[in-house]
Length: 252
Ligand SMILES: [Zn+2]
Image 1 (cartoon, rainbow, N blue to C red):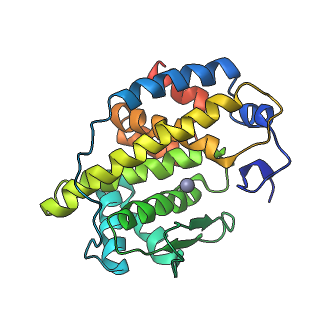
Image 2 (tube, helix red, strand yellow; image 1 turned 45 degrees about the vertical axis):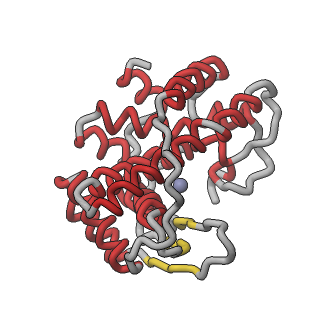
């Protein structure tokens, strides 16, 4: 692996390396976390409805919905989207307990990625598959260009946003529960994970954690999907945008 900081298990990098890799500094990161706190305060409550046990979708149906959602989100790039779906290796791994495992492996620009994921027969399957397919698409669109982890995760979250939008046209059961799942995820990314990143910012030599990437990526994905044109969103998938360029464009 050419850039070990991109690997979730890396123990050889620290906060300073992570900030540097992303062209971020401590102050900008704190500013982003302040914006994230405001975003968290605006997430509506989910109510007391229990989590669903089954979404009634088999893995093929989940994949079909994800690919259609991405084609409708980025219609100009339907060819790449369909080719990435058809040619990537997709492996549904048996789930152990309730812990989610999903991973997209980049084999370089000459090959198609491998997507591994758990299938739980829940609404969350749509988002997990959309997330990993976002990684696969970003790998294909960037054609070997290095993307730092926050920008890669931003693409994966943009893809989750695409499935959320498409679910509004689904039967009420899927439409309502996908919104609840999205809000619950936002609470986690903008709550616990953002708090952990905030604590880590106090020490430049603290060991790198992959989870630091998620709050900022989720926040950027929300703003990008609200404010960027579809063509600029494709540029994000292609690796043309650094965090700094995104922040400049969003005037954050
Ligand atoms: Zn991811």
